[in-house]
Image 1: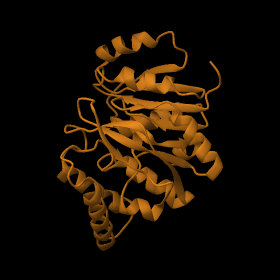
Image 2 (image 1 turned 90 degrees about the vertical axis):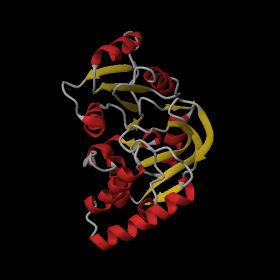
Image 3 (image 1 turned 45 degrees about the vertical axis):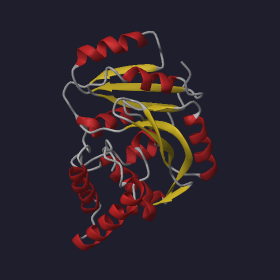
Length: 257
């Protein structure tokens, strides 16, 4: 196997029905990569799924000895990564062809430490809805405080930066905290406003409940060190922007709100 340019980190938990599509979409990218699948739940079903990749040198299958949760599982994948870039991909999402190459090119041109793409929403059953959520060509820290436009499965980040800012505070939106911390130091993320991610909505995941998701978003601001009033102001702005874009959607997002 060629030395990977990108390490793809896929946390796997009760996802036997969707995992292959995610892995195959990563393997179809036109860059040298490794795909690190980390099992964080019951092993038997995943073992059967992953058996088809035993002779694929780009695929690395790792089993957690205990349930770590998505944040710590991703951190473990980042620690293993050999690529200069790390991409996160949830096991129930998938990518379109050319995603990683376009992101690498954009990051090299702009010098950004982080890149995201637009995404097309899928129903929980995996049917594409035609509903596309955009991302700006340049996303600043202040932009991100108003609304988290970076879907975790769309993100490509320089591996050294991902190691500098591991995910934490799993009782909130840990990926949102990561993006804020990165942009607070590095200034901006670049975006590719093409739906290169097919993103599955969820009613049962961590953020399936809108009320629970709102509480988790408020915790993000508190964990970022904001006072009560500043947190309330950020949350109100976040809620307003969210209602303008997503207010009519009845389904919840998975990790970011």
